[in-house]
View 1 (spheres, rainbow, N blue to C red):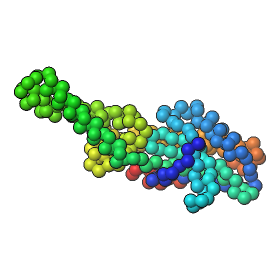
View 2 (cartoon, one colour):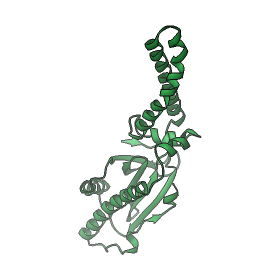
View 3 (tube, one colour):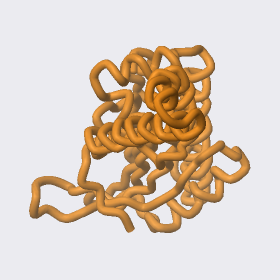
View 4 (cartoon, rainbow, N blue to C red):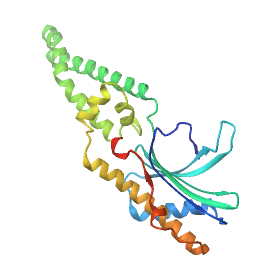
Length: 233
């Protein structure tokens, strides 16, 4: 079970519903939501259980169900509050970790690739000619190395969080976004689809649970999450 130590840096939406004089197993609710998510077949979805602190440093921890896709996460909670109960979900973005270290590793790898290319061209042409034109030829080929590196970051070859870490760095992040990860309608559409799929699964389980317990069904207004500044992130 992961214990979260880094706060989410952006909350896109929140949904909360209280139920009076109600109780159920939190673990059963999380398992039911996981089952309800399977038919949606969300690409690159990861499920886990995390713990958030209820208050300060020495406070108790509360287990949440986390549904993750890239930097986007849904943290879902079902818990008692006195004699009552509540369901909630938070759609947020996780900040990149070790951003400077990742950037340093990428820059070191790029310089190492430049050095290797220089040695290869120098060895191919040999002697004075190789020493003279090895470095210029390596510089000419270097953009292809950077292109391959950018695609590798976008494909996840450097592990989860590498792309977000690179985007968060000055200049290099701007350059990467321009070349490899521009803003598109499709990216926003897929984020909204992720939100819709997870929220739909949560509501499906809540509806079934309330019906089984004889509790009042959710109104149309109660089903809607509170949206934040989603499109500007």
